[in-house]
Structures are given as C-alpha cells and as structure tokens.
Length: 491
Image (spheres, one colour):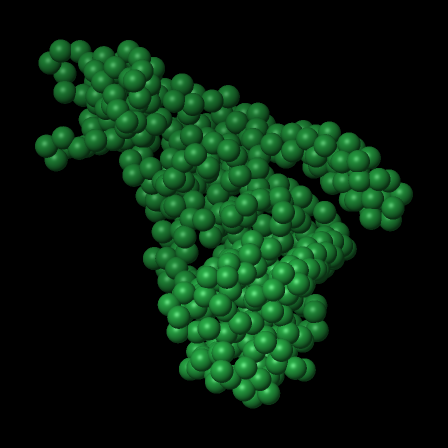
C-alpha cells in the first residue's frame, strides 16, 4: 500500500476508529484485530496516532442506533484535535449514505484525511469521493440483503417450531444451551408461578394486583428485577408458554414491539406451561386496544366503577371526605362531562351490603350453574381455532415452498387471519365467570375465601355476578338506606 497524498508532513494527529456489529462472545476480539491492523497501517504511512482510539463494540452502523464513540470522533475532528482517521474498511465508519456525506463534508471543511487497511480513499478528490460513495452504497446493499436473509431464516425457524439461542432466559423455563439450539424444560419453581398468574388474570384480577403480590413475596424476573405490569403482560401474552411459536416481523413495527405476533407453529421446542385455549384467551384479553388506552392499574376501592348514579347513569368512584370514604358521582375527571356530580353513598355499609348479597346469591347453586353455562364457549370453538391456525401454517408452507406467490399468500391470509382473530376474541369473552372457579362453596367457605382475597380478587367475583349496582337518591333524615341500592344481576 502506498501513502499517496498522506504523509507525516500533512498529518498531525491520526485517530483510529474500530467497530463490529455483533460480538456474541463479548470478548472484543474483532475490534482488537482492527486496531492492530490500523496501527500497522499508521506506521507504514508515518502518521502519529494520538491517544484517541474510538471503539464501538457490538454496535450496528445500519440500525441507526446512537454510536457514542463515533460521535466523540466527529466532535474531535470538528475541534481540530484530529485531522486524519484510520479504519479497517469504509463500512466500519458507516453503512448509511447520509452519514458518509457528513464525513465527506468534514473532509471539505477540515481537510480530513482517511486511510483504510483495505485501500486508500482520498476524500479531497472527486474520484476518491466517488470510490467512497460506491463502497458505502455496496455496504448498505449488503446490510439490507443480510437483514432480509436473517428475517427469512428467523421465520423459517419459527414455522418449524424452533427457538434460536441468545437473549435472556424466559421466565418459567430452565435452559440448556447448545450450538444454535436450546433445550428447554419447565422450571419447577417458576413454572407454577406462570400458571398461577395466568389463572388469576383469567379470573378477572388486575395485572397491577398480581404484580404487587409477586413483588411483596420477593419473586424476581429472570433478569433479577422486580416485576412490572408491562413485563408480566408481555410474558403472559407470549405464545411460548403454551408450547407454540409466534413470529413478529421486525419491519412490521417501529420502536415498541407488539404484544402478540402471528402464531406460525402449534409445535415448539419449548414445553407448554398453560393450555393453548387459555393462551388464546390471555392474548386477546391483554392486547385489546381499550386496555392500551389505560394505565392498567387496579382499583383501590371495592365498588368503584360498579356503582352507577341513578340520575345520570355514570359510574361512581371512591373519594374521602373528612376521613370518611364515599362513592360519589364525580364530574371530572372520572365521570366526565356527562356526570351530574349530585350523588354519593357511604362506602363501608355499601361494601358490606353488596358483599352479603353476592355471597347469598352464590350460595344458590342453580344461580352459579346458570352463570357458568351462559359463559361456556361453544363445544367446537377450540377445534375451529386449531383448524384456522393449521390453515395459516399450511398457507405459509405453500408460500415457502414456492407453490404460491407472495400476493396470493397475502390475499388468502388476510380473511383467514381475520377469522382466527374473531374466534380468539369470542374465546376471550368466556372468562367472565372464571373468578367463581374455586370460590363457590358453602356460605362459610365463601366468607373465608372472601376475607383472604385482595380488593382486585373480590371485584372479580362481584363482576362475575353483577353487571352493575344502581344508586338511587337518598331519602331525607336517613343516614344509610339499603333500598337506595338496586343490583343488576347477570344471567
């Protein structure tokens, strides 16, 4: 290699920039080899290397994510502390044509010299810039083509039911890692916790209530952190815990990964912790658009949102007044503009009255049986869901084998996916009376279970039995009148 226009007389301080996109072992061997080659090149060119060696290890130039050392290098060039850059190849600097133009602009304004181990690039001449742009465009093409191959490989793995190695261990599983494949078994401690969380959500308990209980017991995530609502919701929505494989194309979203993807295989390397039917119900229940519009928190008061004002029909919420909790028709922000703000009832006796009424009606076996029968899914619903999933798998296999074109695959997939989503939504709506499973018994047993339950669990039982409770205006000179409360029973 010849130094060309670069010499000791024209370069005061040279900097070395090293980057590697993926360092699986985390040892930094790739960038270390790049630095060694760049130092050898600096000796041949006679360039003095400053104390500036910039290393972005395990950072992609194609992803668009910030590269801290790259930004430091640009700042030092701008300040005049560095007037030459050594790198292994121009694609180590950037794979973005836009960023490459920034480098060329720096060369114009500051006389920046650039040398690469794989060949000299003179940014001061039109020919050198053309070569740099050609190399940059080639690097961009290779990144895009590589990304396309990787996405296709990931989908093929998913359709075959395989999980790839890498990433954090999913909660609920014990892993034995091999060369590119993982052998997973259900963890004897974490697996039952996953199943219990799923059961409680399906019984109507709030995510926030379950998270609070896990953290109070000292249960940590697989990363050793306390649980958060988003963490638990994402785990319960994963098809993995039902022994199935889903796929979410990385180019189908920006920034935030969707909760659920397309189930592309009903078989997986991972054993299921919960049933596919319960998984379908959870995935539909927790990914509903209306849930994403709320904070997902649990109610603090037993009958907030269950009591409704007889004057305006709006739900009532718990509010303290002079140390006494009351349910009020609150005009803003809870009730909205439609709320009249003219109704309230004392909370303690109201809670006791509704509790006793619910336990009394559940003590009537025929009422609980009628509720369960009303919410029971059609006998063939699970079979129809499985059949729709099998059709989607077969359709993907036909496309992968080249038997149908991409446009044919998309045309056939849209109505099939819509039908499957409708079936899963129908299944999710059968969770109304799940809260009664394990609760209904003798009156004494139900009272004991009620006393040991938290507010969210008690609310789930009430909502399984009551649609709402209408609160009527109070009579004069009566502190608490049970006749003001009109329960609207389900069934």
